[in-house]
Structures are given as structure tokens and as C-alpha cells.
Image (tube, rainbow, N blue to C red; front, side):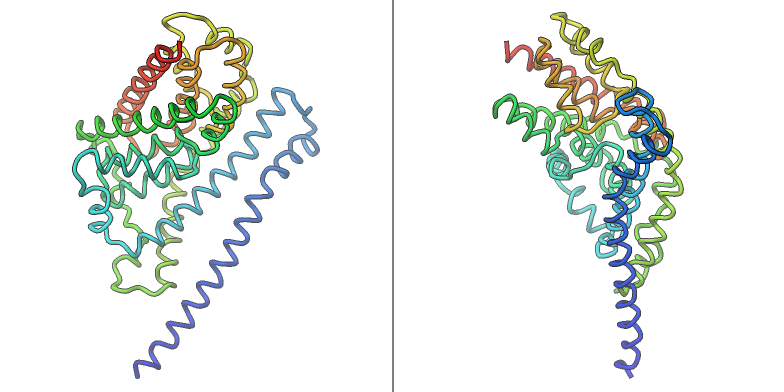
Length: 350
């Protein structure tokens, strides 16, 4: 009797795996076609001039919107599936049950090896909060994931040497850990939007004891639909603003401001970096240009950290899951840490 009952279950799980594998192949194909398709639409179909401000902005928007939505959907599905193996209590024990600071260090280290930009780290942030991991620990991950990028580390090593690359790593980790600890001590959970707490990881599959793969995948799909449905508009708005800024940023004027030897150059770099939108690797050429024009290393690193950890599109997307009070605390704590790091590097590297 048991064998008869288990056969349909195995067949259903095999079918579910087949659908997921086909969907994953389609996801990979779509992800790799985004860049050429965006360029083709911008410069061939629409007819905008390559290298023009408008052309750069439109191409950026057409590339980044599907990229972030694909990453968002894919990561939420994978995380929800994995989370079906872990109860919230077990997940909380892994990161949240540690002595204060240890969980932040572990989360920041996870962020360093996680190759996500600030916007695509948001779904992982939602998953952490939803699983019951303390808010401060979650923020350590959210800050470290975009701020300390392995591609940027390699590029900084190649252009400026291992000392600068190591300083960048230590500084980014320090800001993520300290900011997470501070946010955790402030007890700001009430400023997380209510729907984040209400979402149950993996949908109905989590409530089933020993769910089948088909049930895990079904729950993950429902979770993905629910979260993406709530945040997609914020993603589009955030990237639209970032694309406009990306296409029209006056790089020479930026270099003129940050290249000056003045006490306000570091906070100015942070303020100028927030509206911009790029990952750590994408902002490296700008860093190199600023350094060539005489900007101090600490000022340039502060600018780069602000671009990747406090981007305006990220803040707009975060608004869907965080209330303004918590976003303000997040920006204030991280910006203060970045400013201090900038001043410290300028002092050390004189």
C-alpha cells in the first residue's frame, strides 16, 4: 500500500523538477540576452545615437529593469525553496542566536562573497527578516553585499596594489558590521512594513511536514509571485531614476569637486554618490579617473562606497519593505561610517 501511494508522489516530484530545470534554462538564456537586446532596441529600433546621454540612459533602463526583475524572481524562488528545509527557528539559531556582533560578522562575510548589487540584495534582505534573523544582522548583510565586491577587489588590486584592496575590504566589512550592530541596538523592528513579517517562507509547503519537491517548488513559486508583485513597481521607478542619472552624470564636474583638497571633499563624495547607481565594478573606471585627476584615495573610496551601498534606486526599492524612519536611520548610520572611513584613509595615505 505504501509503495502504491508513493509512486504518484515520485512522479509528481519528477515532473516538478523537469519544469524547474526548463525554467532555469529559460532564465539563463533570457539573462544573457538582456544586454544585446537592450542595445538593439535602443540603438537600432528606437534609433538613438550610441554614446549620447539619452541613448545611455535608455539602454541602461532597458537592461537593468529585466535584469533586476529576473534576479529578484530567481533569488526569491531559490531562497524560498532552500528555506523549506529550515524552520524559522533553525535559521534564527544559525545567525540570530550568536553573541552580539558574531552574527553581524557572519552576515557581513556572507555579503562579501555574495555577488549582488544593492538592488538585487533586497530580496535576500526580505528573506532574512522573514526567517526571523535579527534586523541588525540582516542590515550587515545588506550593506556588505554591494559594498564589498570581489570584482572591485581584483580591479583595485590590479590598479592600486594589495594595500588599497585590503583597505577597501577591511573598511567595507567594518562599516557593515558596526552599522548592523548599531541598527540592531536601536530596536527598530516596528519600522519594517507589516507584510514582510506576514509572509510565510515557501508558502503552504512550509506548513507540511516533510513536503515533496513538488510542494516545495509550488510554495516557492507562490512566495515569489507575492513578493515580486509587491515590489516590482518600486524596482522600475528606482531604476528609471538611476538610468536618468547614469546617462547625464557630468564626470568632469564630479572630478572637479572631489579632486579638491578640502575638509568637505569626503562628505561631498558621499552626498554625490548617493543619487548615482552602479555596482562596485561599474564605478571602478570613475574611481580611476578621479584618482588620475588628483582626488585623495579616502575621498574616492567614500564616493565609491556611497554609490554601491546607498544608491537612490536601492532606497526606493527598500521603501516597499521599510518605513521612512528606518531608511533614514540606515542612511545616516552607513553614511557616517563611510565618511569616517574616508577621513581615515586620507590621513593614512598622505
